[in-house]
Amino acid sequence: MTISQVSAKSQTGVSQSRLIKHTILIDTDIGDDIDDALALALALRSPDIELLGVTTVFGDTHKRALLAAHILRVFGRENIPVAAGQEMPLLLRHRPSGVPQAAILDTCVSSNELSPYSGPELIIQAATAHHSNITLLCLGPLTNIAIALTIEPRIFLAIKNIVMVGGTSGFPLPEWNVRSDAQAAMIVLSSGIPITLLGWNVTKRWQLRESDIEKLHYQNSPQTILLSQLIAVWQRHRPHWHPRLPSLHDPLAIVAVCAPELFHFDVMTARVFTRGFFKGWMVPRIIDGPVVHGAFDLKTAEARNWIMRRLLNNDMTVNGADATSR
Image (cartoon, rainbow, N blue to C red; front, side, top):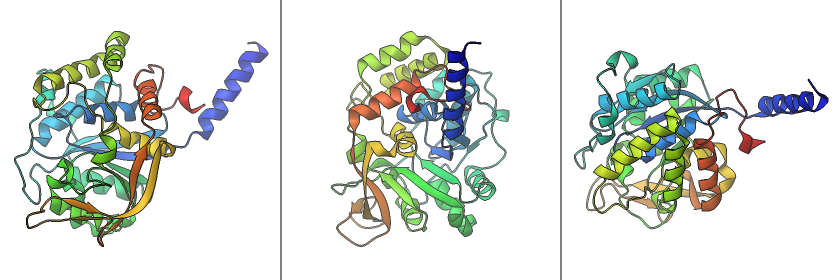
């Protein structure tokens, strides 16, 4: 081994030892919009994230959980527990969405792959086992977290923070994740857990480009082939009013954890209405309510490049060093 090789190996070791690890659990309504699957893939491709588990919420959570377990298996991470969570919201606003991306599952996918715990139970277990060191990434309606807080109110002391994709930091609106269970959103926002809010008004600014989809397709690894298949299913089944290129809201939750410098955050209030004409609406800043750290701006180009570098990096493992971090 040459001196330069020894030096490079030493520098890599130092980089790995200095890598800050974020311990997270993902709660998701994976299977209809494509951004949940890409967020999960991004977490698995991030060496600075230790993923403790995945819980599913809203509608056919069992089918959602099987899809999440399949993605974990393709990424070589089948040791991560996946728990099917609450199917119906605490406050029904509309019929839960379907799980069209589960069409990629074959008959070999077994329910035995899933955790024996429910979604709320896995959240409680993970929070208790990693006291004050766990971040919840909430990519769908907040029903599982609200139920977990109801079952075990003391876990608000055990959860380091929540990164929530939903609501708004701008003009009041009935965003999907909040309006799908406004009661759960109200419970979680009022829980006392520190919350980082990535509102629809900020996350809608970034879309996959056609060239990004082509790069995933032509890389031809098992992982990118799977992502390409899921994108194709989403494009066939998306509502006709949705653009063909997906707005990737949920992957920005991973960015907020690992590269928060790409956002501009500020303290704001966020109140959710659970009755009346504005049921399901989040109204930020202009009236009293729970205090959160809201995202107000995003370095869009830098965030896109950050995400694509990680999704396309085949050599990235949970124990390895991310070339973008060195």
